[in-house]
Length: 392
Image 1 (cartoon, helix red, strand yellow):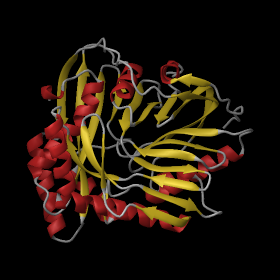
Image 2 (cartoon, helix red, strand yellow):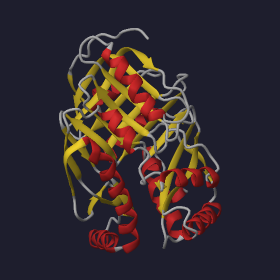
Image 3 (cartoon, rainbow, N blue to C red):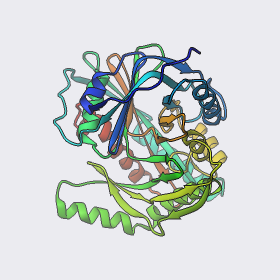
């Protein structure tokens, strides 16, 4: 791997960040009050498919950053379970932008010609029934089951346009655009869930679990939010996630503050239960990606116990998740960084885009309602692609 030049900071807008995106090698990340884009050439940190891929990636990235002159930054995405190579790049320069939290989403020039779900709703509900049987048998306490939706268009889908639409429609999300190997595919999305943010000795996480679709009617929307907050099943599902994240962060921290009760957070189209977690890291705490490796996969995307839930996912899901429910983000030579779950995303290739959406299954889950939850989550990506969710 060749050395890269020190990263340079240039203040720009989100629009300019997406303008800087290079097909085949580009990475653009935007969250909160800042955004980053790789510029110029880049060197790749090769993380092969296989077990313990996030922990292996963290070690390889740390070694690469140690060899990089100046304050280098590693950016990219890692798959859910090591089923494919990770995409981690060290760009020659990093452009740092000031995000736009408003603006009109650009109109797509393509028209959608087909939608193909995998599995079909009836098949997904049958898988949920099998998951509930495994829960009743004591095999798992929670498992997250996902669905896939292949979207076909009449002409090539421009991933940069899709990213800008995500950015305009989901201003509070972690928006990402990552060129996948081979130069023909792009990973694009707007994740609502931050796994870890490290700033010096401060660490933050914002686990989500428990979801409800929003209403355009303000009164009804507040009713939906309150129903979510009061739902025993949703609260139980959420607590499994929040406790697991807090337990994984504890060894790294000298103190950790966890919300005693779940609160509400929202995107443009969905309500979520969330728990704010923040702490002070011990002096010898590792970098952001190593901390993320200790958390991933959380019960928000896998289940608990982790190994049993992952095995059940392998039996019940008829497709490879690839980057869905993996990690996307950045880490620098100081160890600071941010990693989000790769949710509300699509892999765009030519005239197709493949979406994924999942739902957490616990005792008391109802298959038809879990199917509706995945439909609501598909809606975020469908709107970014220029599709009205009612077409599904």
